[in-house]
Image (cartoon, rainbow, N blue to C red; front, side):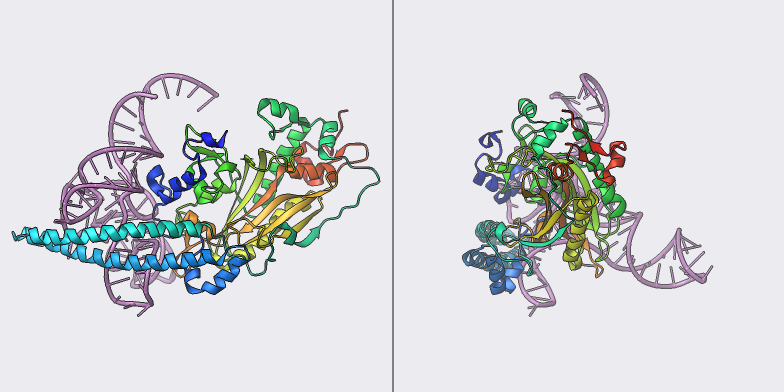
Length: 472
RNA sequence: GGAGAGGUGGCGGAGUGGUCGAUCGCGGCGGUCUUGAAAACCGUUGACCCGCAAGGGUCCGGGGGUUCGAAUCCCUCCCUCUCCGCCA
């Protein structure tokens, strides 16, 4: 769908304006109970430790002027807030007086005029305040999450750090063609007919390949649920604007999403969206909703298809299954206690790794540098599978700790042991994305005779067969 | 798609212009009683913002309006439920 045809979000700025600046004009209840700084890092960090925050953000390429602007707008906001609030206190008291006076039969005309004057003054200040808050919000929107101290500093993927290699790879004596050729021989892919049905980037998987895909999904969900303490969820594949805003796909990345005009629904680009939004605007207090403690996070997993327009990436790594508009993925989401979020991230990475290790695959773990992380992440690990046919590493999982950044936007909180309501920390990780897993699996497990040996772990899900055999 | 009803605190449910941030019930927390538990009884219990604090302010689906003053009146948008129709 052409971006310009989207009814509610034609030009990008208008979208931002529509959803954030004008808030509820869309009619959506995007931010009930909203505080003022909901979409961003904690403004208190800038207030209390300005230089430190500037230094941390500089690692991510944020200019000092931006942070200064936020600081100044925040100061202005608080000053205006103080003014308007003391006037409101005055008006409230005076109005109450008028009520009493009227009951007693006194003359209230003069008092009314006086209070009206106060009301006018309040309206003036509130108008300026609204402008300041809009500016502040827009400024804060440009500020990404604070990077964890231990991650490498750098502008792009070249500065990512390889943390470890897992498994082994030895080139066999015979040549390994790429996954397209392997798939061709196995008769499991049909790209041209995908183009016919829909368009480029919508491949069709056939026969044993389709079954393998289904088997892998079930294998992954079983590992997460039976061995790692996850609860499985089968969520909607389309969500509303409030949900897309909650996890941060909107307003900035509208052009990467598929959108249904008639209903104003969005196709999910990842299960992270519905699963994380499951607890949007909730307080996890251990009564009807689960309880969160440092020892026990809430862990959800879901299989979903994922839909991505991939606008702007035409031509980049688009061969075969490597970058497609629709793909399957199993996703893990954790709602964790702030004290143990980074520790839980390590666990999450291990949980994703267990999937790959269980399939006997060779991969590496990267710690992303400050410049290569997603906007909301404080720390992020990528898992990359070796694809010998492509001669490149393929990202199949990204495991991130968002600290409270995403939770602030989601308005997702919990009751701590001290009785206070606090923001949760959120983590998510792929466990894992299927097309590239399929590619690496085909290429790493290719046998000399053109068959592909199936890992033990997957065989029970494949009716006991031990390999995919060539059909031609 | 047609017709109707309704959106209030963790949940249920009162409240139609002036101590209503909101009666009450449930749930939660604390206590009494009990060997322990249940039951019963007593007490307590919303969120957010500014502030060192005292304190103040905001919030009754979202936005706007009327008014000295709005959960309560008006406009508008969104959502949910029920019945009918259609369909898996």
